[in-house]
Image 1 (cartoon, rainbow, N blue to C red):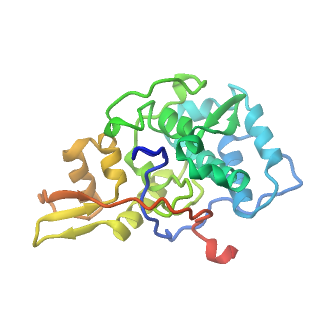
Image 2 (image 1 turned 90 degrees about the vertical axis):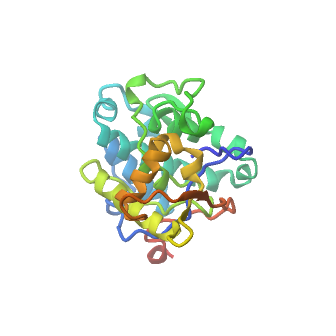
Length: 268
């Protein structure tokens, strides 16, 4: 996600290694790129993870036409899985190709990162213009984003706060990376969110307060405001039912920690 802390970057949280494995198997480096957009995005992320050539898949993403990409705009789960995988693959590639760019997060999140259906997109375009439905990275999640992504508005998704525990820009506080499939994306996002919150949230019943990842402040509007944030925390068993502790927010670690894949220990 794009930074809201004054020097643009992506807010996220500190990342547990979720006990899930990426959906796709090893990509066939010599075979043709898949025509299904979500399969294409997952295989791109898999090749990035395995440090395999990505040019054929990037070319296929760039060449997608409106009919091939229709499901991404027509179905919420398909859109979530596709854009999450595209974002995470694009972010890791950008870090590999231009590592010094991260020193200026304002430039990093606005730099061209990937081309989809002939439209050049930045990480900010994908996160705030598409996954967050055109909301600004500023304004605590309440303000509309200025500017357009270049893609039709039908590709915009309604904000889902769970994406903040799935997007990884390379910062140490980002969550772990896994691939998403439309059929299981909701369960996978629930698992990723639960693991991340369990690793980061600090609830103190005696002082009646809870310390939350910074992303919960940066995008509190995505959670439905303070009342929605309490509901969210209860749903993920972070505070008791009926509890309304005072909210505190942790700092964010922008130290670079790329390639935080869920199965990175097996890879390395």
